[in-house]
Every structure is written in C-alpha cells, then in structure tokens.
Length: 566
Image (spheres, one colour):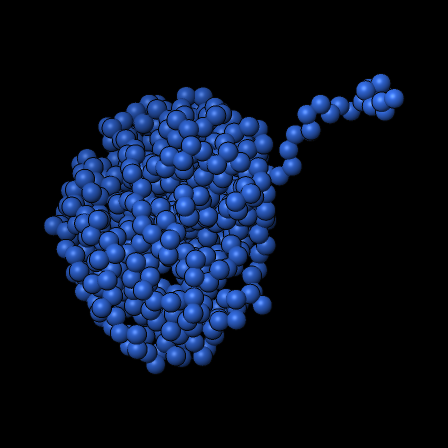
C-alpha cells in the first residue's frame, strides 16, 4: 500500500492504465486524436506539430467540443526552456454592444441568460473565432512540418468516416432539441430525426473539403479570404453579429505565463483573460500553510480546507477577472503569498464559512484538452473549445463548420467586468499547467470543465505534491467543487466522508463527476514520460518508444567484418 493510501479517507481504484515512453507522448480525449499526434511525431514532427494535428483531428472526432470556429489557449514550453502562452480566445464582434441582449434575471442562477437564449443558441450567440489562426500560427512559428501534413489525419477521418463512441451519441441526444432546429446540423447528427447510435460511421464530406482548402491556402482563407466571405455572409443573413471585417481584423495575443510556487514546485499557466492559473495559484498559496500530506487524501479535514479555499478564490475571480485590455486585473495581488495569508485567516478549520471578494460565469463545461511532449523537451498543454456542446448548435451550409456560442460568456447586463464590449476577449477558466522543480518539468496537465477546471487542476497538483500519487491516480482521483453554494462531491468519496462534511456545515451535493477528462504527463529525470487520461472522457494516452537501428547495423552483415581477429 502506498503512503497516500495509508493516510487516505477515500481510497479508489483506477479504471484506465498509463503509458510510458521516451520519444514522445500524446494524451487527448479521443484515441484517433492521440493516434494523429503520434503519427506526426513518428513522421519527424515535434510536440507543437503533434498538438496542431491532434486538435484538427478533434474537430472531426469530437465535433461537439471543438472546431476551427472556436477559441482556446496553449501553454508552450520549448526545448530551450522558453515558455509562452498563445491566446486564441474568441472576441466580441465590432457591432456588438453592452445592451445587445435582454437579460432575463438580475439574480443567479439565471443572471447570465438572455431572452430567447439568443446568447446561447443560434447565430446571435457566435463570437469571432481564434482557433484556426492560433493553431496555424504556432505550427508556423514552432513546428517542423507543413500545414498539409498536419491536416492529413483530420481530412482522412472526415472523408472516410469514423465510428462514433457512446459519449458522442450521448452528447447528440442531450442537445437534440436544439440541433433539430437547424437543418444542416440536424442532417448530419440526427438523420431521420434520431441521434446517431454508437458505432455508426460518421462521414463529413463538406468539412473534409473545407479542411483541404485550408491545407492548400492557410488560415487567411477564413480570416478575410474566400471562406471567410462565405461564412460571414451566411451568418449575417441569419442574424449574427459577426462580419467579414471581424474575421480579417482578428489577431492572437502572445502572453507571458503566470507563475507561482507550491512547496518548492513552480506552477506555470496562462494569465488573464484565462482565470484558471491565477485561481489555482491563489488556492495553493492558502493551502500551503496546512499539512495536507499528514491530514491525508480525501479525508474530511483535507476536503474541508480545499472547499473553503475554493470559495474564497471564487469570490475574487468573479469580482476581478476579465480581459486585461478592458479591465484592470489585480493579478500580482491575487497570486501573492501575503494576500493568501490575509485570506487564510478567514478560514475556520472546524466550520464552513461564507466569503466576499477581497479585491475589486456562465462558462460551458464542454471543451477538450490535449497534453503532448516530445523527446527534445517541447511540451504543449492546450485547452480548446466551441464553448457549449455543438457550440451555437448551427452549421454553416456547405462547409461542415460548427460555430461557437462564446457570446454567452459575456454578462448581458451593461457596466460590469464581464459585460459585452466590441473586441473584448471572453474570460475562460482554462487551466493548462506545467509543474517544475529546480527548472525541470515534473508534470503537465489540463482538462475541460468550465469554471470547475481550476478546482480540478488544483486538486491534481495536491495529488502530485502532497499525496505522492502516480499520474494515473492523479487524473482519476475523486474531486470536489464549490463556488460558495453547494459543495459538489463525486461519488468516489465514501458516505462517511460526505456525512462528516455535512456536519462541518457544507451543503453536500452528490455528483457523478466534477469537470471532464484530464490529460496529464509526468516527466522522469531519465527522459521517460508517463501519460494518463481519466474515466471522465474518451481519453487515451499514446507514447512513442523504440527508435532507429543502432548506427552501422545492416540486414546482411559482411562476414569479413564479423570474422574474429587472429
């Protein structure tokens, strides 16, 4: 029995197995995307090439989660040790205004909803996308292979088809009432009015043709070119705010990562408008004063402290995180050890509390994530999405493109940090993290799950650092979440632990899962990488081992060279 199990209040058994390899590792939430990444690594590409190939493939095999008309962020560590964040998040169209939607409520839980769900479903929900531009830019700047090679696996699966999983079927069934309102998307996923069944062959010829065009002409095809004209003309005709000028003007932003430390481990992640790394570092700073290794994994004592720190950080996130080009985000204060010490004094170890912001979301859980590394030391951890399941739940006819519904992340009430403004970037809970000790990577991880992402990523750090779990245990361990209302507790925690939390004052809500499928890689000093994916999605790790023949080896050795010397 490992040490963490000896001290655990919630032992568990992993459902999946990890993979170890030395020449490359890819962990994505679909086996065909992981296979595409490994194919690219085997063809001589690096981790950046493999990431882009995996993401394009995910637009085909996880069409409900991610697409070229979406947005996301990538944390990249290059082989020379440089680290950067590429922000490809969606932006508000130029003609959008703070009062473009009519709010249905001034109180939670319907505070972020607009009349007629116009900010969630249909053409008015579509924001200006960043994914295609961001993926192509990182491939050109940091990759080795051409765009045509990186798109080949995605084109193949779109043109030939692939067998869909029960997970995709469930997503279609969940959104069928909305999908049925749009003939192009209904024709693909609801043939004859019924959701595709598991094992069905899904062929996407229109989307394959679109990807072929992009492989030939590059991202400018969408950002001001012929494809952009087609898409924007259609969207305008059905009432969207997006125009061709928005696409032509869109630009990615390169950002300096946010950094903190936890028990000697440096934590690196994306800065605002991604809130996740700031949120995670703030919580870790508060927890650093408590000996969680001694109190044990999944015990009421540990979980109570985790839940209380989650509530404190959530109050600050809602008050202070948005696009830094529009809002003054007090990032330095939020991640400082002194601020954590100040907030920590509010926590009662014996009773659940209520917390207000110490500084002056409507996000969807339906996202995807990839974590990929190569033998040279390049690492990418990247979260990408079209926001809700199937985005705006429409399809641009003849293109196979499913637009995002990112406009739902803006506050429909004017005058607030998250209120809608032209050109403003959406705020996201993306928490793509790299952990390092003495400058050497220890782990890289990320996951989908909207505002539950930071809480889950933070617990993964605790599992690595405080509890000493294996990477497979880290990603599969039961999780908790709260934003100050009820405490969501996964079923993996036993009844006696849940009862103890209730006695401490937590309003316990039993849930099947908190957030989505985590994709993680652990790094060993000898260069071996261990990849792991969890049970909450179709995640699969794939590694590249072996290598080339020993130098000088040939199939027919010369007997004169192998003759023993006299």
